[in-house]
Length: 589
Image (cartoon, rainbow, N blue to C red; front, side):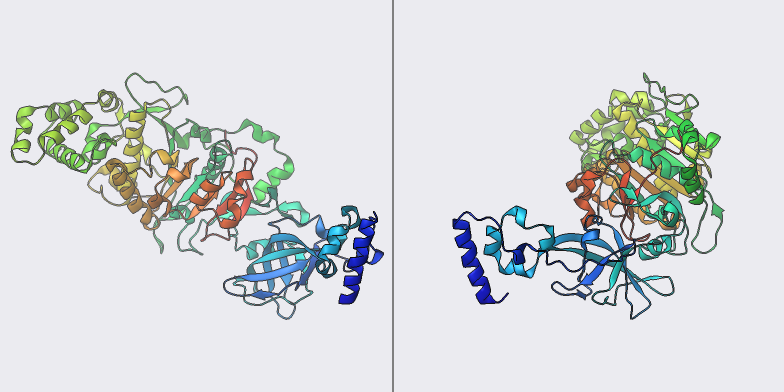
């Protein structure tokens, strides 16, 4: 339609509108859509288009495709697609990043005309449907993923992925390892020929990264009720019985000892079978078997260690071993009794008193230390020599004399420093429930266990038999409610603990220490600790939490809508960021 025709048509429509006419001219209401392909293969969804421009660069790309009417209602954000280059053997692998409608040129030119045409007169066919593709990788002729460096041609047919191989190569997925779930898009498992779901694994050998990724640490985070514990149990079940070399090149192959801090008394269920597993459909069982998934309880390799606190009782797992924290551990970890109340100068004074007490006293008990701190004659020399100010000494005495400590230390049960051979044993699973303890006792117990592991792995306790024991084989330390212990708080006690665990985490690859942190408040975990985490398993959470937890940008807005069991895995050393679907059932009790 020429420009003069447009002006005449606009004038005519205005006159018609004034006269009460409502119908647009036939040439404006008639569909001007591109011809719909008469024969599209089931996997084909459209063609590469150039509505504006088509380009790739190191910083950004713009690859769009026309969606014919027969495919418009089938395409969803996040779907994986393949674009054959044609002039080269490679295929571009990407995901649908944006879906849009664009006005056709005739309507764009007649914006005023369009405003006068009734909604009933202009249908969907007056618009072009476009999808924008985010390139992820090139699938080379050798079956390896490479960076995107070649551009697809206009009008090239675009299709969905059609094979497990395409997905695994395109996303650079490990072929096996520690099973986490099945690859998904928008909450639905991706299936290929034969309706087979695609398993997602965490790399468990040294071929690709030089170290199994369990020793570069994991975060499992999500809001309450989104399946953190369920996910953690299923994942930890895969860790049990796995085998790792103690050194990158050569060295003994050992099973890890799994230590679990369990604030809600839930993880002893790893010992027993889930009775509902017998109801799993045969097809699902075949998927699990084909994916190499370990299922069922681990039996007697799991021991529950229940800390004793005067006036408190543990009523969880029937079979458990009681233990106590001996005060002698305070000689190694003075912060166990420092709490968050002491400032830097007061903590330094406490350390001096503890060091001198353990040098001089044959009685290493808490009661003996409390008597030492309150012995005015004994401590007079500290004040006279100005080693500890009188006011500082008063603050230390008040802290040390808290009545709760007498209920925590030296309770007559097996000291953990004597149980260490069974607690820290190759292939063992040692679970430490804490729900039965007071808040003060829980913190002392958890920090004692965690500190023994950290110092044993960083060789700071080689003079201790338990320190030498811990160094002998891999340790995986799983900490539920991790924000309570590796906190972003800035008390003197917290700073010391964070420094200790950051140092241990940095040496995790070399010393074979893996941290699995489980939390519903990742924003409260120390940033210094989070910076050491290479794999983040993120379940449903609000957008602010998703950003704090390190979710990829394009998932941050989606995570608030994730239902139970739906998660994002961000593990740069393992694969592209992906959505996966966890198992709907627990592999253990």
